[in-house]
Image 1 (cartoon, rainbow, N blue to C red):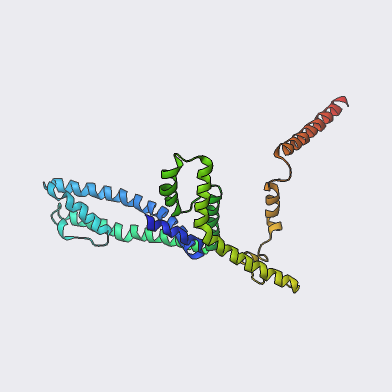
Image 2: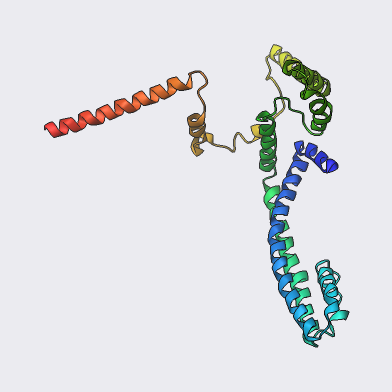
Amino acid sequence: MFYLRLLLYLDTFRFFGAMLVVLKVMMKESLIFFALLTIIVIGFLQAFIGMDKVDDNRAVTGFILQAMANSVMQSPDFGGFENFAPPFGIVLYYIFTFVVMVVLLNILIALYNSAYEDITDNAIDEYMALFSQKTMQFVRAPDENVFIAPFNLLEIFCLILPFEWWMPTARYERLNNYVMGIIYSPLLLITAFLETRQARRVNSNRRRGEEDEDTVEEWEQMNDALDLEGEGWTKKVEATKPNVDTDAAVLEIRELRGQVEELKRLVEGKQEVNGT
């Protein structure tokens, strides 16, 4: 499980992030296949056991289960069903093998193919959605001291268990800050170096009267293809954008005042109609 958790680090790359989404969707699509397989296996198992009871041979139930499992795994065994109420046993096993190997497995392949095409056609959108979900997970984390995996094991065994239960809160918070500073300092130093180099390049371009940067990002390439005004996204964003300059209570009072004024106009209009 620990090594599988390491795969989560790869979702910061677009290819691996899209592939992880594909695997997730494929696992969900597999539920349909296994549900159909379970129903079919139960039905044929009941028929084989019934034929076995007719032949008065109760010791081959394990053989039946193993033979059905072999059919699912693409290695059917036809030799042992000749004595199952001949010729119905072998015919029924042929039918079971055909249904499993031809029908169900092709359905599974079609489900996997559909899931793969749907994800890869929208690889950028799926990657950005996964990345945004992971970012919001850490931004809105309920834990005050966020240790990303596998450093959360370090938090549990080296901080929480030995220190949290007896150390004062202020000192424990300071200890967590020291530990996080040591753990994250290499990444923060690399980020600071890259940001500093980018800032120097921007300042150099501004002194020469050029654009801040020459790199065209992916979202900038789609500026000509998107019509945010025509599609109404700009109005939706403006309507849902929070107002951080004014207090929420003041905004509610203003909205209530507008509603009272509108109600007042309606009442006055109704009085004028009744007076005339």
